[in-house]
Length: 113
Image (cartoon, rainbow, N blue to C red; front, side, top):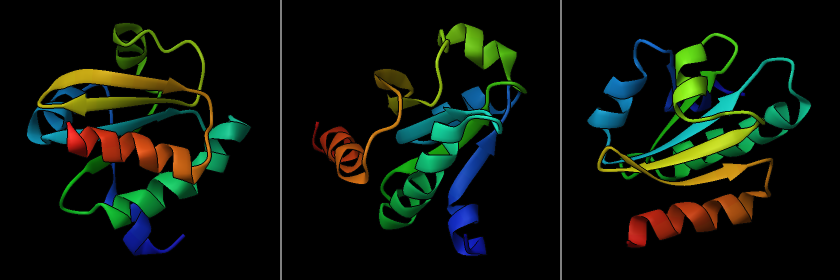
């Protein structure tokens, strides 16, 4: 992973989560844990898409083990979970890993609507 890719994805916490949601018109949040194998599998996909959609869609990641309030508020019981926000409102969620083209389709629909 290059520094550019790593920097394209915001790291958010319980304290900074709502600020990230409010500050970005379109936001995709990757809810993960370091010990989660499928989370590690999709991390590079999220980073790639963050670079591809730079300036149009923001991407963030939140470690659910370190952010219990986010986990409770958004009912994160399985990971990875992707949360999709538009204008500060959660409009979609994806539980479980998915291939890049499927994630890209979800992002495109977020942009289109």
